[in-house]
Each structure stands twice: as C-alpha cells, then as structure tokens.
Image (cartoon, rainbow over all chains, first blue to last red):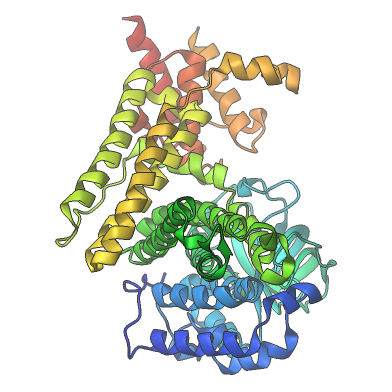
Length: 498
Length: 84
C-alpha cells in the first residue's frame, strides 16, 4: 500500500494554493448552483474546463498526470469548490475519494498504468459501489458476487445509490469473493468498465438535494472482468474499503466546511444589512449570539478537517475521519438551518440559495456511513482503547487548555465508570456506546479547536466559544438516561414491535 | 449450564452476528477470514456473550480471540473460574 500523505495544508507558493485559486476563480466565473439544481444534472458543458484545470487529478500521483496533492490540500480545494456548488464538489470529491483512492493506494502497477492517467485527465470518471438493497450500514452482507473463471471473474449483482453512476466510465465495486486470498468470507474491490457487456445503469434517482450529482443503481449481469482488475489483495476488500472510506469521509467533511462557509457568508451579509427594530439585525443581542455561534461552528469544522488530514498514518486517519464526518455533517446541517432562521421569511425562498444549501447538506448525515452507526463505532473504539491525544502545543491559551482538559476528563471518567459497572456487557449496550461515541467525537473536535487556537487571538476567541458549547454537549449527552422500561412503555418490547 | 450448552450458546451468537449458518460453523474457523467479523463485530460478540452467559469477560479479551475455538475456550474458562 502506498504511504499516507504528509500533513495537509497548502503554503502560499504550493500546488495546493494554486489549485485553491483556480477553483475559486472557476467557481465565481462558471458555477451557478441554483441553475445546476434546477437542471437536475451535472453541468456537462463544464467538464472539459474542469479537466483542463486539473480538478479530476488533484489527488492522483504526478507520475500518472495528477497534481499529487496531499489529502489536506485536496480538502482545502474541495471545500472552496463546495462553497460554490455542492453537487459539483460531490462529483469531483467522489471521483478523487472513493472512486480512485482504492486504485491509488492498493492498485498493482499495471492497473495504475491503465486507469490513473485516464482518471487524472478527466477522460474517465470514477464511481464507487458498495451499498445494496440488503446491505447499507452492514457491508459484510453484500450479495454481489465475483466468481472466478478462466482469466478473471464473472460478476453478478446489483448496487444502489451509486454516486457518479450515470457519469462514470469505471466503477470500483465491493464484491463477495468467497475463498479469494484464503478468506472464506472474503470481499474484494474490483474495477469494472461501465461499457463492459452485462453492466447496466438504472435511472437517475430524484433526490432531496445534490440534484446536480448523479445517483443511480448499477446492475452487473454475469459481467466478465479480467483478473488484473482486482484492486489490491483479493479478499482484502473490507480493510481496503476502510482506508478508502477514511479518505472519502474526510473529503466529505471538507465539503461540509465549504457549505457552512457559504451559509455563514449569506447570514453575515444579511444581518449586517437587514434593518429591523431601528438598526441592523447584527446589533440585536440574540442575533449577535447566534452569529458568534455560527462563526465558531465554521472555525471548529475547519479545525477538525485540518486535524483529520494531519493524521500520521492510515489507522489514525480512519479513527479521525469518523469524528470529522459525524461532527462536520451534523454541524453543516445546523449552520444552514441557522442561516435560514436568521434570514426570516427570505430564508425560505429558493432564490437566496439557503434552501439549496440545506437540502444539499442533508445527505451528509447518512451516506459514507450513517452518523448513528458511526457514533456506535466510535463509542466501541473509545471503550476498547481510549483515544490518546498528543499534548496541546505551546501557544494554546491556559483557559482553552483547562476547558479541553475538563471535557476530556469528563469523557474518560464516564467511560471508566461504565466499564467498572458493566464490563464487557457495555459492548452490547448500543445506546450507551452511542452516547459515548457522540461525546468522543465532540471531544475530538474540542481538541482540534484547542490546537488551532494557538494560531491567533481571533482563533483563540473562536475556540473558546466553541469549547463552551462542547462542554455543555458532553455533559448533557453523558447525563442523558432513558430507562429501557420507559422506552418499552412507548414502543412496546422487542418481540411486540417485531 | 453444561459445557455443551455453553458451546451451543456461543455458536448461536456467532451465527446471529455473521452470515454463517449455525450448522456450518466450525471450531477452526477464524473470526476475521472465515466469519467475516471485524473489530466492531468482535466487540459486539463479547458483549452479547457476557450478557447471555453471565460470565465476567474483559473488553481486552477482544484482542486475544481470533478463532471460534478460542472463543469457546475463553467462555469455558471464565465460567469455570466463576464457579470456583
């Protein structure tokens, strides 16, 4: 497997910085997200321009015609793209993340030679398919199977919710390959040409949001795929998918940052200019408090993505990407909703962009791992082995150190109490793991804010405000208790409900 | 509970957690390769065993069991210790 990228972030003269500038100009000049949303499809007339700008090769190795940007630089670039058009950013983000990452990280040289130059140039668009009708959160239940035949495999099955399905040229699919690589329950990643006989793409889904992003079912009817198209190790599918998903979730979190920035910019402009009760809205105490919270939320999201992309290895990225995805998608929704509220009735009108931002944000709490499922995963990880965070750097103000220490100790103390009381039984208590997982993700975000607070007095002020919210959130979450009897009294016990 | 009943309970839980039918389970199966379990499902298994069998399992046991036989041995050992 290729190594992880160096810590993210672009400098003034770096490729990443240039990419951000290009995307900013491209977005301002060419992207009209309301028009894309109204058309209900990807703006095909812009594909060539995007390819010339190198958008489809940002993360791909320079040796294959890409820009070789780090994960951090890709995230910064895509967050700018998402400020302009979330659907277009999703198309590019999926291509660079789930669509191509498997080949980049695990592909044999021959496969890389065959596919990566086409991906980097934009000649071929990548898609990724894992979800099936009977396998959403539990990917181990997939039924699409690749049976070995002479020279390759025959693939049969159906995938749903394939982003880029209607646009793509190559689909990397998670398939069941029992026995492959010595694994009885093996799963593998396999790169399938959309044009291969037996592949059919269903109709575009009509969605709440991201209408300019293609989402389709894809069917494989006895499709022959040559052996060299297996990505990485046969049977190594789920582990490889975890790596690919870690990238994908982090890139998605960066998209959430862009969307939240757009919502904040609109809210700021409105509250500074709209006059009510004798002055601009921003003079009103309640509005000031809400705007300050919005600003600190965006600061937190930026800090969390930077923290995630600075992970020194794949395992750490995998862990950090979970928290980044949970926190950024939840907060993206809240920032869009808050911006609508601050606009009053105008916020409900499509022409303001705000309803579009909200609609586009909704799916991020669901795809690439539904947040509630991820919370339970984070909770399990925290219970099994509490996250070890490096000491805060010099320059972090004492007040922020103290605030972070308080939330972290609160979480650790709670987990210790639960473990002492329940032992391994805690691992079967999904509702408790969910609470712990949520609190752990908030503590991760608090840590990211604390680290970022050292940059400037303004950063410190934003972190300080967010840490107050983090403290309230962690305390409230861990104190919440709903007895099973109370739940059963409303919904009935397990057997009755079934 | 007799050792046979304990083993049956372990197999029931493993079958419930994985896509492998109860009758197909074998002691030599690996949790990861043969049963398709990852670290999350291994921890779920431990929690379910602890709750169903009333044994005192440790969360750290997640890291020591790699095969069905090791799970059976762990449960038998812990139940035996609990009796004495």
